[in-house]
Length: 636
Image (cartoon, one colour):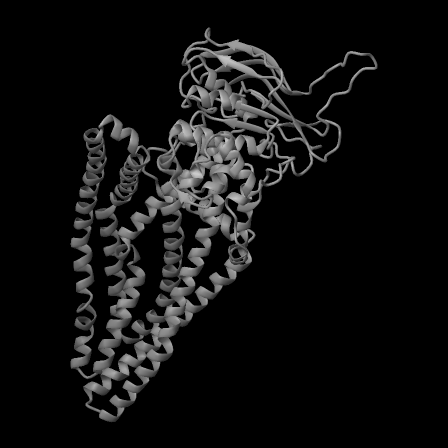
């Protein structure tokens, strides 16, 4: 319905003949062949590389690679320091065994100097690793949020229930992925350097001890894999079930008033306990599997405390080696064994990390399928076109009667709207809306009114036909510029996007308004003045330049000037919300969806509409919660 006070007639299109509509949904995404199956090793490696690689080839790659090189360099230094401590330990214990006080004091001084000079390198290595992990996480968060919110992918995921808990995957899984990836990478690098350094030491002391170490580590790794092979799937399920339980608690918070009205506390308690029970039962199985693995790994660790000394003890008793060599061999043995036994020592961490890789890789695959599943790939699809023009008035003839008094704003041609199961909601609908027109669509509940609005908004494209919007294009050329959301257009200016995001002159108003997280002022500015709703400080963009992409608004076509504080106050009074300013200031930050009644939220949404001054407004029962007086006021 276009915003206008002129031409008081209403054109009606009754949809009562249409069958009931189901929940709206986008064109279904193709299924994931790996969903529902425990990932094999090849799938995990594929998903790991697919998730990890983009950052290291991004615009931030130079800084990232330099920082990674610095971390590896510090790791080399710390490995060298560890080798040095190994020799210091040998001489220290030799002096102690020989009761050589002078040599003992000298070695003790070397130890203290080594600690003072070496420990800072260990601290700096860990600090550099954590800061790189944070930088990587920041980029990945920006990258995944951009893909998640682009092309209404978030809407497809939610409406089709494609994957569970995308919020957890963006917050928890990305954080765990970046941190653990770097930790394991450094562990593997350190293990390789350690293996080379300490193998020479151990082999030089006693070759049979080195052979025993190989047999011991290979056997331990094999047994660990056999005992712990079920942990990967159990960890994956635990992440899901914990997230489901947390989501249930969030739902209670978001719907607190409705639950209280229904006195639904008992039912909510049962539903939440059911989700918690599922997580509890899976965690019980996880703990039992971990317990069985721990029986082996604990014994595996304790045996190596005495095994090296037991092997080289005969050489010490025969006088071939000193006491310090026993300690040196034990230290070298432990280092090399830790390198060979990464799977044994890190099996639970590896299984948990595998679950993270699988969840994040599954999410990445869904985002890829969503972006590749363009409407042009479907057999039937509603075509949505935006046409921009500068002049709002049409040309008149030389006679007394104008050819067209008012410009066309919306044209629907042969629109047939279907549900995913092929039921027809709207058939062969054609209509045209011009400036000053008001159109009311009526019909019983479930007849397809909201579905029609979703089709007009581009959320539902199942069907055939064409929807064309004619939008004022500000200072751009007079000729029409046609943008089809289903195909790229070569003659369009760079500022226009084929997905219609840049269209600020069309305003959709749903039945339940969306309240953003922020101040009352930000509620009024949303969504027309995006940069003013969520400003990004210079400090943030200087530290992480790629985050500046989040502030780039495509909402550039003939956007009204940002309203002043006085204009914000006036529009609140116009929609009879002036009393809010007696309770709150424009800069008060609250949970507005809980503070305001549904009727107040609908009036606030109309205030946004008045401030945005669109050419065309499409409303879906936007006054359903208002009394008659307020409804008449807002429709006038």
